[in-house]
Figure 1 (cartoon, rainbow, N blue to C red):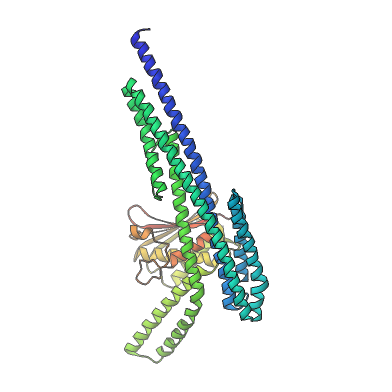
Figure 2 (tube, rainbow, N blue to C red):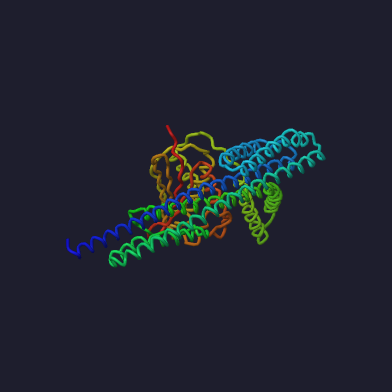
Length: 475
């Protein structure tokens, strides 16, 4: 063997060894990072469960307070449901508790929850039903203290999990930096023997590691819109795909939590004031209609405007009540095609379709609440008709897929503006001059109560499409 061949053999042998060492360091670091990320996801799940438990306890207290305010047992079924949910979440939190500190906090919450339930059932409810206001107020103060204890334990446990997440993320970052540093050093040494091969290896390893590092740093900083563009068939590409799936899942879950909390807050507000607002609105409406029988000219026009605005206020209150009412889904099987055609017929009878062309195709069965699903379909069709405008077209398509039914409503209107697309399901957001901004928010809440959701998108060219996804009913 010639000296050149021998030197080349030595050089490539050293290069192979260097590459093997670099690959080992990178894979070892990724394994540690993967384990740290797995631990982070486990701790994040524990944080979400703990926060959900805190929310359930607040709901429990809300029904307890309503029992005291209303002076009857009408909220007892709601309290029972909230209590069952709190107990189920307690079981999950206990299953996630590992350290003695975590178990101690869970034991405190379980013991205090049991004490709160006993106080409510055996002291507060009997006092309310007997009309013993003094005892009821005293027991309410005790209940408030117990709720405070549970909330404090939940906050302590969540903080404990968040500190653990920070430690895991710090460890992952340290491992990542160390792995990157050793890989660069080894590849730099290999580049002295074969500059071209070393440069190629540097590009094929250092670049994806750098992208993963930057992506992990952005995710650690809270940027859940981060997407690592690394389309490779190797472990770096798979790790990037896992990063992208993880951030997408976290972002979607965060958006749902924010939307659920927003709707829950509006629901609690509506439950407290909506009935009180409805009474004066009814009185105003009654007097206006009485005066309209005798009014003429400009006064009649003024009274008509007052009536329209009063009805609009009542629609807003009804929308708020829809958000606040818990929806019990019956096991009734519905023919979705028949429900859609019934809504279309009613819209035609009320002249709300004007000269818009509307077609319906497909059929499927779903299980759900007929009145509430009719409300969702009516809202989607009315929005599509208004968007299509005179001489426009609205197409309704029903498709039965594996485990799912999709009802799609398309229109030939101008489509959705980018700024409106992100806020469609926010309560009180509307692009209509006379809209309340509650229709789509209520519809999304109804769809989610049925185990589905509404998905909007713009069509190519012009027009918009809203698809109602529902679980498919088994025959």
